Amino acid sequence: AQKITQTQPGMFVQEKEAVTLDCTYDTSDPSYGLFWYKQPSSGEMIFLIYQGSYDQQNATEGRYSLNFQKARKSANLVISASQLGDSAMYFCAMRGPYNTDKLIFGTGTRLQVFP
Amino acid sequence: DTAVSQTPKYLVTQMGNDKSIKCEQNLGHDTMYWYKQDSKKFLKIMFSYNNKELIINETVPNRFSPKSPDKAHLNLHINSLELGDSAVYFCASSHNRGSMNTEAFFGQGTRLTVV
Image 1: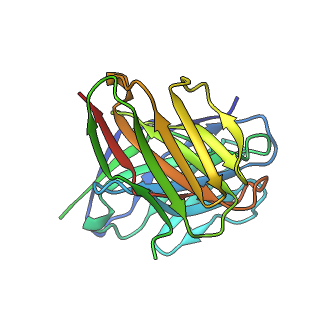
Image 2: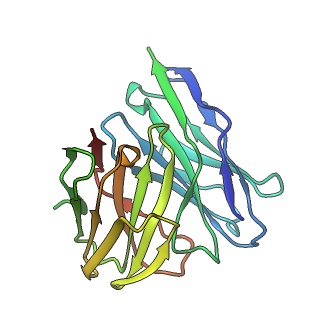
Protein backbone atom coordinates (compact mmCIF):
# COMPACT_ATOMS: atom_id res chain seq x y z
CA ALA A 1 0.00 0.00 0.00
CA GLN A 2 1.10 3.51 -0.65
CA LYS A 3 1.65 5.88 2.24
CA ILE A 4 2.84 9.44 2.76
CA THR A 5 4.42 10.55 6.05
CA GLN A 6 4.93 14.10 7.18
CA THR A 7 6.59 14.02 10.59
CA GLN A 8 6.55 17.75 11.32
CA PRO A 9 3.16 18.85 12.61
CA GLY A 10 4.39 22.44 12.86
CA MET A 11 7.32 24.54 11.73
CA PHE A 12 8.38 28.11 12.39
CA VAL A 13 10.58 30.21 10.13
CA GLN A 14 11.60 33.81 10.10
CA GLU A 15 10.71 35.96 7.13
CA LYS A 16 13.28 35.83 4.30
CA GLU A 17 14.78 32.60 5.59
CA ALA A 18 14.53 29.24 3.82
CA VAL A 19 12.60 26.34 5.30
CA THR A 20 12.38 22.63 4.49
CA LEU A 21 9.21 20.65 4.99
CA ASP A 22 9.77 16.91 5.17
CA CYS A 23 7.91 14.23 3.28
CA THR A 24 8.67 10.54 3.04
CA TYR A 25 6.68 8.05 1.08
CA ASP A 26 6.28 4.33 0.88
CA THR A 27 5.50 2.51 -2.32
CA SER A 28 6.66 -0.59 -4.08
CA ASP A 29 5.79 0.87 -7.47
CA PRO A 30 8.73 1.95 -9.62
CA SER A 31 6.84 4.89 -11.07
CA TYR A 32 4.79 7.48 -9.23
CA GLY A 33 4.16 11.19 -8.97
CA LEU A 34 4.68 13.39 -5.93
CA PHE A 35 2.85 16.65 -5.29
CA TRP A 36 2.84 19.45 -2.78
CA TYR A 37 -0.21 21.52 -1.96
CA LYS A 38 -0.65 24.61 0.19
CA GLN A 39 -3.76 25.26 2.25
CA PRO A 40 -3.92 28.80 3.66
CA SER A 41 -6.29 29.69 6.48
CA SER A 42 -8.92 30.59 3.90
CA GLY A 43 -9.18 26.87 3.21
CA GLU A 44 -8.54 26.38 -0.50
CA MET A 45 -6.04 23.81 -1.75
CA ILE A 46 -3.36 25.28 -4.00
CA PHE A 47 -1.10 23.09 -6.11
CA LEU A 48 2.57 24.07 -5.74
CA ILE A 49 4.92 21.62 -7.38
CA TYR A 50 5.21 18.17 -8.94
CA GLN A 51 8.03 15.62 -9.11
CA GLY A 52 7.93 12.45 -11.19
CA SER A 53 9.80 9.39 -9.98
CA TYR A 54 11.81 9.21 -13.21
CA ASP A 55 12.63 12.91 -13.35
CA GLN A 56 16.37 13.37 -13.40
CA GLN A 57 16.32 16.82 -11.88
CA ASN A 58 14.66 18.22 -8.80
CA ALA A 59 11.54 20.19 -9.60
CA THR A 60 11.53 23.95 -9.08
CA GLU A 61 8.71 26.50 -9.28
CA GLY A 62 9.70 30.01 -8.31
CA ARG A 63 10.58 29.99 -4.61
CA TYR A 64 9.54 26.35 -4.27
CA SER A 65 11.88 23.49 -4.95
CA LEU A 66 11.68 19.82 -4.25
CA ASN A 67 14.61 17.96 -2.73
CA PHE A 68 13.92 14.53 -4.20
CA GLN A 69 15.97 11.63 -2.87
CA LYS A 70 14.58 8.54 -4.49
CA ALA A 71 16.73 6.01 -2.64
CA ARG A 72 15.61 7.47 0.68
CA LYS A 73 12.03 7.83 -0.55
CA SER A 74 11.88 11.44 0.46
CA ALA A 75 10.48 14.47 -1.35
CA ASN A 76 11.08 17.48 0.85
CA LEU A 77 9.70 20.88 -0.07
CA VAL A 78 12.10 23.79 0.20
CA ILE A 79 10.67 27.29 0.37
CA SER A 80 13.29 29.97 -0.14
CA ALA A 81 13.01 33.57 1.07
CA SER A 82 9.92 32.89 3.19
CA GLN A 83 7.16 35.46 3.18
CA LEU A 84 4.40 36.10 5.71
CA GLY A 85 1.93 34.85 3.12
CA ASP A 86 3.59 31.44 3.16
CA SER A 87 2.00 30.74 6.54
CA ALA A 88 -0.30 27.82 5.82
CA MET A 89 -0.75 24.06 5.98
CA TYR A 90 1.38 22.16 3.48
CA PHE A 91 0.45 18.71 2.24
CA CYS A 92 2.57 16.17 0.42
CA ALA A 93 0.67 13.78 -1.85
CA MET A 94 1.36 10.87 -4.16
CA ARG A 95 -0.24 9.29 -7.18
CA GLY A 96 0.92 5.86 -8.28
CA PRO A 97 0.57 3.74 -11.41
CA TYR A 98 -2.02 1.48 -9.86
CA ASN A 99 -3.83 4.28 -8.10
CA THR A 100 -3.80 7.02 -10.67
CA ASP A 101 -7.42 7.71 -9.87
CA LYS A 102 -6.62 9.29 -6.52
CA LEU A 103 -4.09 11.38 -4.66
CA ILE A 104 -2.96 10.01 -1.30
CA PHE A 105 -2.16 12.77 1.17
CA GLY A 106 0.10 13.08 4.19
CA THR A 107 -1.12 14.59 7.44
CA GLY A 108 0.30 18.00 6.65
CA THR A 109 2.70 20.47 8.23
CA ARG A 110 1.59 23.83 9.56
CA LEU A 111 4.15 26.48 8.65
CA GLN A 112 4.20 29.79 10.45
CA VAL A 113 6.36 32.62 9.15
CA PHE A 114 7.18 35.35 11.65
CA PRO A 115 8.60 38.83 10.97
CA ASP B 1 -14.10 32.09 -14.28
CA THR B 2 -13.72 29.79 -11.28
CA ALA B 3 -12.16 26.48 -12.25
CA VAL B 4 -13.81 24.18 -9.70
CA SER B 5 -16.74 25.62 -7.83
CA GLN B 6 -18.76 23.98 -5.13
CA THR B 7 -21.82 25.19 -3.27
CA PRO B 8 -22.62 25.89 -0.59
CA LYS B 9 -19.45 27.03 1.15
CA TYR B 10 -20.98 26.55 4.58
CA LEU B 11 -23.71 24.15 5.60
CA VAL B 12 -25.11 23.83 9.11
CA THR B 13 -27.80 21.23 9.61
CA GLN B 14 -29.37 19.00 12.21
CA MET B 15 -28.71 15.33 12.70
CA GLY B 16 -30.92 13.14 10.59
CA ASN B 17 -31.37 15.64 7.79
CA ASP B 18 -30.49 15.04 4.14
CA LYS B 19 -28.30 17.54 2.33
CA SER B 20 -26.53 17.97 -1.00
CA ILE B 21 -23.32 19.65 -2.08
CA LYS B 22 -22.91 20.62 -5.71
CA CYS B 23 -19.70 20.76 -7.71
CA GLU B 24 -18.95 21.99 -11.20
CA GLN B 25 -15.68 22.30 -13.11
CA ASN B 26 -15.09 24.29 -16.28
CA LEU B 27 -11.62 22.91 -17.00
CA GLY B 28 -12.74 20.21 -19.39
CA HIS B 29 -11.39 17.53 -17.09
CA ASP B 30 -12.69 13.99 -17.31
CA THR B 31 -12.08 12.94 -13.71
CA MET B 32 -13.70 14.37 -10.60
CA TYR B 33 -13.32 13.56 -6.92
CA TRP B 34 -14.78 14.09 -3.51
CA TYR B 35 -12.37 14.35 -0.59
CA LYS B 36 -13.17 14.68 3.10
CA GLN B 37 -10.95 16.73 5.40
CA ASP B 38 -11.48 15.93 9.07
CA SER B 39 -10.90 18.13 12.09
CA LYS B 40 -7.23 17.14 12.15
CA LYS B 41 -6.88 18.36 8.57
CA PHE B 42 -6.40 14.85 7.17
CA LEU B 43 -7.58 14.58 3.55
CA LYS B 44 -9.05 11.31 2.41
CA ILE B 45 -10.50 10.32 -0.94
CA MET B 46 -14.16 9.38 -0.86
CA PHE B 47 -15.13 8.96 -4.51
CA SER B 48 -13.63 9.28 -7.93
CA TYR B 49 -15.57 9.54 -11.19
CA ASN B 50 -14.27 9.36 -14.73
CA ASN B 51 -16.60 10.48 -17.53
CA LYS B 52 -19.61 10.06 -15.23
CA GLU B 53 -18.58 6.56 -14.24
CA LEU B 54 -17.77 5.66 -10.62
CA ILE B 55 -14.15 4.56 -10.36
CA ILE B 56 -13.42 4.69 -6.65
CA ASN B 57 -15.68 4.26 -3.66
CA GLU B 58 -13.35 4.31 -0.71
CA THR B 59 -15.47 2.40 1.84
CA VAL B 60 -17.78 5.34 2.35
CA PRO B 61 -21.09 4.64 4.14
CA ASN B 62 -23.91 4.29 1.66
CA ARG B 63 -25.60 7.32 3.22
CA PHE B 64 -23.25 9.19 0.88
CA SER B 65 -24.36 9.03 -2.72
CA PRO B 66 -22.44 10.85 -5.43
CA LYS B 67 -24.10 11.68 -8.71
CA SER B 68 -22.47 12.79 -11.92
CA PRO B 69 -25.03 13.99 -14.48
CA ASP B 70 -22.21 14.88 -16.88
CA LYS B 71 -18.44 14.99 -16.72
CA ALA B 72 -18.43 18.63 -15.59
CA HIS B 73 -20.58 18.01 -12.53
CA LEU B 74 -20.26 15.80 -9.49
CA ASN B 75 -22.74 16.27 -6.68
CA LEU B 76 -22.72 14.68 -3.26
CA HIS B 77 -25.92 13.79 -1.46
CA ILE B 78 -25.80 12.78 2.18
CA ASN B 79 -28.72 11.07 3.89
CA SER B 80 -29.44 10.87 7.60
CA LEU B 81 -26.60 13.13 8.61
CA GLU B 82 -24.62 12.20 11.71
CA LEU B 83 -22.41 14.28 14.00
CA GLY B 84 -19.35 12.46 12.64
CA ASP B 85 -20.08 13.75 9.16
CA SER B 86 -18.99 17.22 10.25
CA ALA B 87 -15.95 18.02 8.11
CA VAL B 88 -14.82 20.01 5.12
CA TYR B 89 -15.71 18.35 1.83
CA PHE B 90 -13.62 19.14 -1.21
CA CYS B 91 -14.50 18.56 -4.80
CA ALA B 92 -11.57 18.27 -7.21
CA SER B 93 -10.92 17.48 -10.84
CA SER B 94 -8.04 16.38 -13.02
CA HIS B 95 -7.41 15.29 -16.59
CA ASN B 96 -5.61 12.41 -18.23
CA ARG B 97 -6.83 9.57 -16.17
CA GLY B 98 -4.07 7.01 -15.92
CA SER B 99 -1.36 9.64 -15.89
CA MET B 100 0.69 10.11 -12.76
CA ASN B 101 1.80 13.65 -13.42
CA THR B 102 -1.58 15.26 -13.39
CA GLU B 103 -2.38 17.46 -10.44
CA ALA B 104 -5.86 17.80 -9.04
CA PHE B 105 -7.57 21.17 -8.95
CA PHE B 106 -9.66 21.71 -5.85
CA GLY B 107 -12.80 23.64 -5.13
CA GLN B 108 -13.04 26.01 -2.19
CA GLY B 109 -14.46 23.35 0.10
CA THR B 110 -17.78 23.03 1.89
CA ARG B 111 -17.67 23.19 5.66
CA LEU B 112 -20.43 20.91 6.89
CA THR B 113 -21.45 21.17 10.53
CA VAL B 114 -23.98 18.71 11.90
CA VAL B 115 -25.60 19.75 15.17
